[in-house]
Image 1: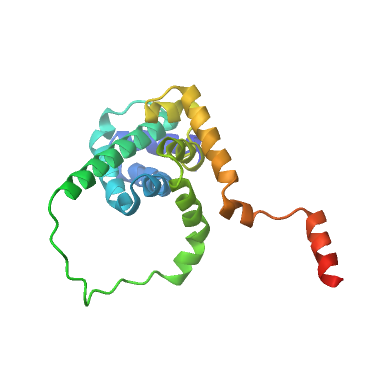
Image 2: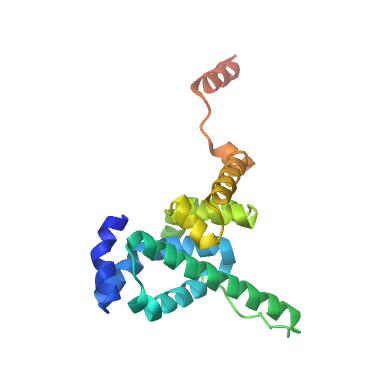
Length: 199
């Protein structure tokens, strides 16, 4: 959903309308989750919930258009992700009790859901392998749809630094062996291979 289509729901949500808030959530939650999966892994859904709780609490004080809202939303998500990382780090320092896992079965994923999201999950996993500054710049620019200025505002960096981080991240992704193996080969190479096999 484009920012222009979010203007009326945003205005309504700021005024306390639940239906307006629901439109914002449905439109932006998938991008928030994708971003947070790369930033904080398995905790993404919990962190997204914390993000939307803060948004709901602070929304009456928000001023701005849908683009500003998107920047504000992802800034909150980033801060909640950082907080989660700190909590995880503190827990590592505490002593851990062993947990008995015998008898606990993982719930299998629904096959259709796996098929629908395999490409996205694969791409997010690769982006998650990038250095953190590059991964965040790529996610905010490509997945969240923010422009350079908005991304810089979320990350607290200069626009030039965001451009460089995103460019380096995209270059690194382009040369990743898994990305290279999925690229279609030029027709001339494929024809040459067929000739060799036929000989």
